[in-house]
Structure formats: C-alpha cells, structure tokens
Length: 586
Ligand code: ZN
Ligand code: ZN
Image (cartoon, rainbow, N blue to C red):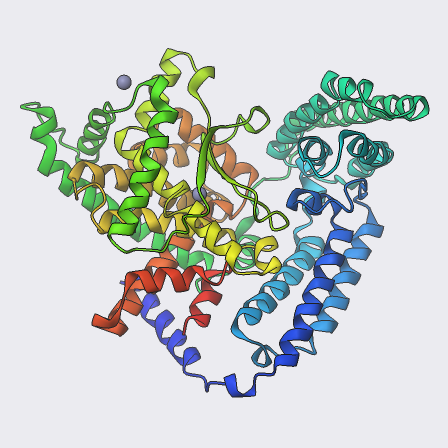
C-alpha cells in the first residue's frame, strides 16, 4: 500500500512542475549559442584533466599523457569544478532551449558527483582496482587513429611515469577492502599481458629509430617492474590483513553513501529506498504471474507428473523443462543473425518506432581482446566517429566444454535468446544508440546516463511482448518474467547488501530460490555486487521509470496516445536521465 502512495505523490509533484508557465517566449538565441560554446570549452578542459577517459571516447589528443593520481591532480579537478560552476552561473536554466537545459543539468550533476567522489566517497583510498594502466594502453593499440609508429611514440611517452603512478597508488591506499584488493591483483595481472611479446613485436617491426627502441624497451621493463611491485604490495596487504581481527574495511558502503551515489548515478525522481520498495513489489507481481502461467501450462509440458507443493518449486521445474528448447551450439551466432531482420520487420509492421535503414547492424563474433566479459554486447561508434559501423558482438561457445555449452544454451534458450536480441539490438540498445547519435550533443554521449540506456533496453523487452511479439505464448511470458526477475533482483540485492548488510547466504537464497538462477550465475552476481555499488540498480530503475511514465501519459492522453510518437520523442533527447526527459517531454 505504501508503494502506491509513493507513486501518487510522485506523479502529483511532477504535474505541478510541468504546469510552470511556459517561458519559451523569453528564450534567447544568443544564450543557446553562448552555451554551445561553453560546452565545447567544458569538454576540451575535461579531456585535458581526464586523458584516459578521452582516449576511451575516441579523442586522442592526450593519448600520450598519464595522469598521476596525486593531490595535485585532485586540486586540478576541484579547480575545474569551481571554474565550470562559475561559468554556469551566466546560464539560467530557463533561458535555454530544452535540449540545452538537459545538458546543463547533466553537467551540474557531473560536477557535483565528481566533487562528492573526491571529498566524500574517496574510492582511491580503498579500491586498489582503481589503479591500472593496462586498459588505456591497450585502447591505443587497438585503435586506428594514426599509423603504428605514432601510436608507439604515444605509448613511449605515456610509459615514462608508470613507476610514479604506482608509487602514488600505494601511498593513496589507506584502508582497502578485501574484495577490491582481490580484484586489483587480478586486473593488474591482466595489465601485465599488455606489455608482452605482442607489443615487443610491433616495436621491432616499427620504424622507430634505435634510440627510441632502446628507450621503449627500458620503459616497458620499468612498467612491468612497477606493476609487479604493486601486485606484490597488494598480496602482502592481503596476507597481513587476513591475519588481523579487523584488518579489512567492509566493502559495503552503507545507507548514506549508497543513497547519495544513487542520486548522482541514477538521477531518478525516486530515492534508493523507494526504488528498492518498488523492486520488492515487482518481484511479488512477477511471482504471481509466473505461478499463474505455470498452473496453466504444467500439464502441457509435464504430463501427469505431480506438481510440487511449493509453488515456486513448480515454477522452477517448469522453467528447467522449457529451457531444453534451445539452438545447437554451432548455430548460436547464426540464430542471432537470422533474428535481427525478423525483429526489424515486427517493429515496422506494428509501427513501434522508425528504424533508420541506412544504419545497418552487423552481427559478428566478439573480437578476441573483448572476450571474457558478457556473452553479447553492442559496440557503438563513439561520439567522435559517428559514421563507424555498429556491431553486435556475440561470443562463440568455443571455449566451453560440452557441459558448459549446454548450460549456457539452456540459459539463452529459444525464448530468452529472442528477448536478448530485443534488448541488445532491436529496438533496444542499438536502436537507442542510432537515435542518440542523431541528437548532436557531445555532453549526452560523454555523460550519458546508464539507467536511461539500460532502462530503455529492458523496457523494450516488455513492450515488444505486450505488442504481440512471440504470439502471446505463455512459455514466452514465463521466460520473460524469469529474465525480468534478474534485473529486479539486481536492485534488491544491491540495496540489500550495501544498505541492509545482507550476507552471501541470504543473497544466494534469493537468487537461487526466488529468481531461479543457476549457481554459477548467482555466485558471479554476488561477486559483482561486492565490487560495485548502485550500478546494478540501473536496469530496473530506468525500466520502472520509463514504464510508469508511459502508463501515465497513456492515461492522460487516452485515445490520442500513440506508442510510436512516445518512443521517438523519448529517444530524441539522447541518453539523458529519464527524470530530465520526462520534464522535456511535457
Ligand atoms: Zn540441451
Ligand atoms: Zn543492456
């Protein structure tokens, strides 16, 4: 009951906001022009301060710079925040056009969140995994922004300060957590591989002169020594802290920090606590729905077999049975490739969203350097390379033994595979990205909101099924509910662990018995929740907020509501937080 009340107050408050007098007549072209100039200046400064981030976004001017995480760099960041805040004072929100208003709010949120990270969250003191030079150097190697010789010279410069970098890291770490220390060791061992034979080969084949080659090798050795030394330092910390009674800082960040991080990262109209309550209620709804469907189709799949007394066990058994319907191991990528045009056709036929036919999506096996993470992902062109193709990466099942492949294929069975394709491709992430790239805002690409992006993809799964994708088959809905339970429980356990102090047993019980997950999956989720905070909330939070917003508009507009208009308008603002998009759409 409490939740419904929250909902009501939420939408009422929203109404009042949207009834503000229309100020469009006061809008001033010059203000927007000046703001556009400010944004360019902001981004240019941002890249100067965060060179690695720039490299990841495809901006290579600072590819040869390694920023040392010391007090001086902190001071530089705080100075940047102050000067940007000062500049923002000359842009009152209402003097700008709607798209720029969202950009302004996003910049403000970024400044506040960065300041909070430096002054309050202080991850650099307790997260050893934060220090790693492997990623950005690997990024340089795999990018094609200049010929190899030039890239090697960038790396040569960048390597100079690696020993100082790791020495600073060691002195920053005051009270690491056990979990982040383990992750720091593992990921820096990964970083060592970047400085291996492959890099040496490309150095030997390059046209760098003898002096340069000599220096390169020396710096490479120094880098490896520094990384090894850092790993050794972390391992020693591990041994020592394990011996002590209270050696480790708890990885749980607690209620206050969690609520604040939720505000900065998710940017929702709801608090972390409210979202947690929504997720709990949604879990109950999903269970009711799954139980109802299971009673309906039990006999069809299980024949005369007796239903287990506990209803959740009945659901679990049925899910296991239905998961047997899956593609062959060797046809995995092919199955995905054939589904994309089918999804395209469905979206067109039902008039759900315009899909730009000039931006095709290419399904490919995940490149080697990206493997080891998700089984499927979207590689989108960055903000500096909008015309590059978009790839749907699917990791082939080569590295699995038979049992492993079977378990994976059961997880991504006939039904779930279709939902996955909706999520990753059409009309999920890929379609959203095409729209985001049309809205020409570097701010929204660079400071894009994860909850909006993931929320949209999760929203489209349900929307497609509601519109009749899968012919309203009860099996499809059952599997969808299980799939949706995953994101729902992501929010529940994230909040439960960090705020309510839940332990591994409690979390495993929920994931295995209430969310019907495989043991390996549940264990991986526990691990992920111990080294991240709030990120696991983004999927459900974004989904819930988009879905509720749509339902509210449907009610208000009645017959006049058109799904296609809603989707296109919603996506037209780029990857801005749902909270801002809602305001802009009113
Ligand atoms: Zn099988
Ligand atoms: Zn996603």
